Length: 222
Image 1 (cartoon, rainbow, N blue to C red):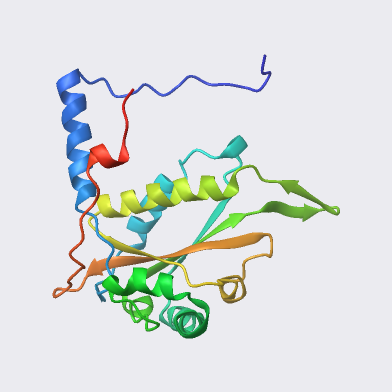
Image 2 (image 1 turned 90 degrees about the vertical axis):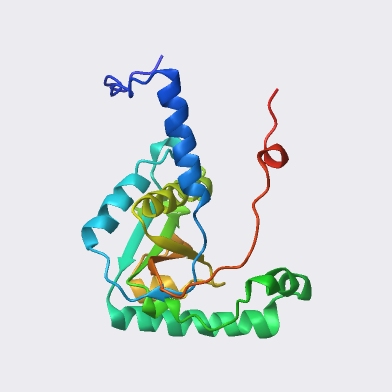
């Protein structure tokens, strides 16, 4: 039996079944409107909104409750410019040399290329890192359990929170991303996970005409 301290569970929402279904359906409908956005308006977003969404992300479950994530929220124009320069350098290598033809064909319908102006136009970038190990203490690095999976769950909750706040996002993953450690002063035991672009869509924003799989194609009930 565990000897760790415990506390009472916060009372869950008291809902009857029609209310429960209505809330679940409304949330599903809201998230179904989420789209990845590449064209942003420079409209500012208050820091307090980003902070609230990060608090939501930080409530994610994690292996052994180690919470192996770190979020760096960037609004400084000079830093965003430096990140764009470094990211586009890696992207040019990707599109011109590293990406296999099959991958480029899979991306073709999205119309992406090495130019990433949204990294400067959007009001916020959130660089997400995960800890492969803990920091070194007296020559020892503590193991982290399921850090990649835990950080992925936190990022999903962050995207949902931002969408719920009426904001658009883009998950950007230039490879490799080690330049983020250097530019943002993060320690070596933290690994860049993704760069999340956050803001308001441009007034003339358009997105690819794609469809999501039906529930029957992605879920099985037994």
